[in-house]
Image (tube, rainbow, N blue to C red; front, side, top):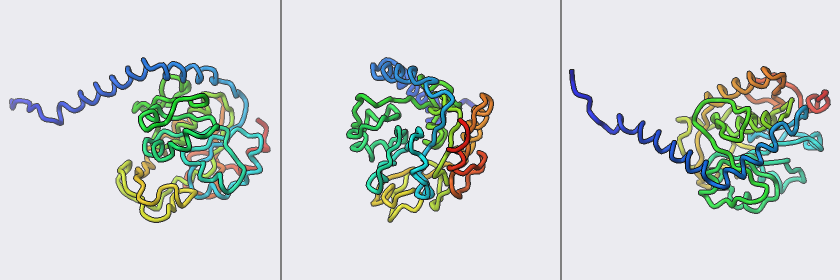
Length: 265
């Protein structure tokens, strides 16, 4: 029998696992972890029976009738603030987990009074922990977190994180808008590229542009995560609908946003 060579490939998995464990323990011992978990526990089930709308990042988001969302709880994602100059609408909260987005939008996150749900790596890119900021811990373990106070799975898209938060908070009906689930840019999923020219993949041309780094989408992982979210919502007698105008996402049943808002809670 040939001897096993101790190559970099045979050692790295153990080093990687050790690094993940250390990062997990370090976060669990951080006082900001305890504080964020306390906030999340208070939110658990707080919106039972209510509706929520998740504002995704696709170009179709611009077709949204913002007047319909008056009085409705809304989750803004990532760089939703790029819309703020064009109208008075503001989301109820903002969710961001991608490290590149966190760094690029850190100035806004440090200045806004809108409640934030940010992955804990936000601390590494200069985002301050303060009132209104709740930090999340993302795990690589595929799951749907019914309780987000310990950890959750990013699922290839911040939309999936928002779905887990909506479930955690007790919302019985959730609608997605602007979830086009398609990109003009192709390449290896999660590979980092430099944005060149106006951004045609998102709702604002400056979303990723001017040489900013961004990660290519992982649509397969995102779609698998959406299927998992649908199973959990339906297993507990809740629903997720796709109120996006157009787009390629067919995991959730389609429903016009006006009909979703008008339907019973």
